Image (cartoon, rainbow over all chains, first blue to last red; front, side):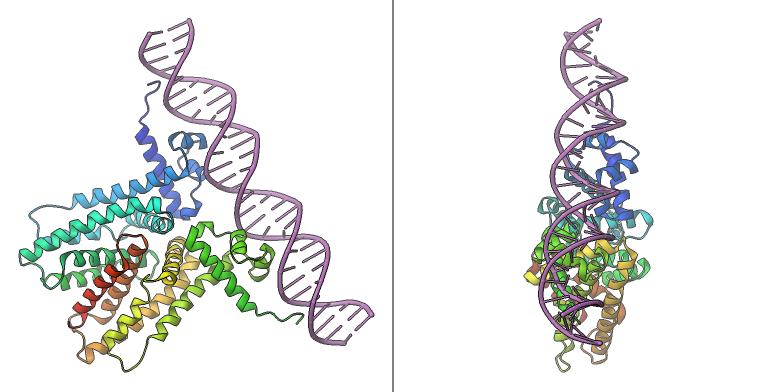
Amino acid sequence: MPRKVDRHERRTRIAAALMRVAAERGLEAVSLRHVAAEASVSVGMVQHYFRDKDEMMVFALGRVSENVAARLAAGGDADTPLREMLRALLVQLLPLDEERTVEGQVALAFQAYAAVRPTVAEGLRENTAQMRAFVGDRIRAAQAAGEAVTTVDPLRAATALLALVEGLGVHVLGGHYSADEALAVFDAHLDTLFGP
Amino acid sequence: MPRKVDRHERRTRIAAALMRVAAERGLEAVSLRHVAAEASVSVGMVQHYFRDKDEMMVFALGRVSENVAARLAAGGDADTPLREMLRALLVQLLPLDEERTVEGQVALAFQAYAAVRPTVAEGLRENTAQMRAFVGDRIRAAQAAGEAVTTVDPLRAATALLALVEGLGVHVLGGHYSADEALAVFDAHLDTLFGP
DNA sequence: TCGGTTACAGTACAACTGCATTGCCAAAGG
DNA sequence: CCTTTGGCAATGCAGTTGTACTGTAACCGA
C-alpha cells in the first residue's frame, strides 16, 4: 500500500458532493466536473475513485439508503408502544427539516432515474421491500397485542402506510402543502389503523 | 396566412414525441435532436414551434395534466354511488396500463424536475390543488349522505387519498410491486373510508 | 536504492448539447 | 406578377459532457 488513504471515506465525500449538487440543481446537473468542483477536488480524482459516472451514481444512491436506514434503526426501542414506534419510524421519511428535504429531493430524482434504468432500480427495490416486510410485522404484532384494528391485512396496511408517506413526501417536496399538514394527514391515517 | 397548418396540432405531436423519449430514456435524454428524431421531423421544425427547450417542456407538462384531467372528467356521472365514482376517478392515476405507465414516468420525472425548478412546480401545484378540493367535496357529500364514515376531516381524507395514489404509483413504476397489488391496497383504504 | 504501485492533476478528444443563422419553397395579398 | 410571410431544413457555433490518456509525486517492500 503505497500511500495511506481511506478509500471509502473519499468515495463518501465525493458522494456527498454529488448529493449537494443534485439537491440544488437537479440530478441532470450532476456531472463529473460539477461534482468535482463541489467537492473541491480534481476531475481526475473523481475518476480515480469511480470507474464511470454510473458507478458513482449507484454508490451515492446507496449512501442515501444507508442514511435512511441508520435513522430508522435509531428509533426502534423494544418496549415503546408499537404505534409510537411506527410513527417515529415513518416520520423519518417525511421531508420535515432541511436535511431530510435534501435527501428527499435526491431520492425523488433517483426514483425517476430508476423508473427508466432497471439496473439502478434494483437498489431501491430491495430497500423498500424489507421495509415493507418490517412494518408489516410490526402491524401484525400490534394486531396480536390488541393495539391495532384487525380488519386489514398487515402487509397491505404496511404497503399503504409506506405509499402514503412516499406520496406525502412527494407533495411536500413539490410545495403542494406544508410538512405540518402532511404530518396531520399521516396521524389521521394512523388513527384509522390504531385507536384514537 | 401563407400556409394553413394547425399549429397546436404540431406542438401536440412534438410534445407526444418528447413524452415517448422521456418515458423510454428518462427526462435527461430529452434533447431537441432526440425529440425531433422521435417525431420524425427536423430540429429546425421543433425550434419553429417552440422558442426554446423550456417552453417545450412546460407545454409537454401541460399536455400530461390535460390528459389526466380529461380522463378524470370522463368518469363523473352524477347518479353513481360516490364511492364508485371516486374509485373510478383515482384509479385513472395509477399506472395500470401502458399509456398510464408512460404518463406516470413522465409525471414522475417532472415531479423531480419541479422539486428543483420552482417555475415548473407552479403548473403541477394548481392541478393537484383543485383535485384535492374536488375529492374533498365528494367525500364531504358522501359523509352527508351517510355513505362514508364521519370520523375524518374530508379535506384531510382527500389529501391522504391523493398522496396514497401518488405513492402507490411511484412504487409500481419502480417495480416494487404489481399494479394489481396497488389496486388491492387502494381498495382496502377505501373500505376504511366507506363501509365494506 | 530501486522498482512498482497508488494517488492524484491536467489535458485532450469525440460526442453531444441548446441555440442562432441562413436559405429555400409554397402560398396568399397587393 | 411579385413581394411578403410563414413553414421548414440545414448548417454552424460555442459550450458541456464522459472518458482516455498522459505526467508526476508519494509511498513501500525488496
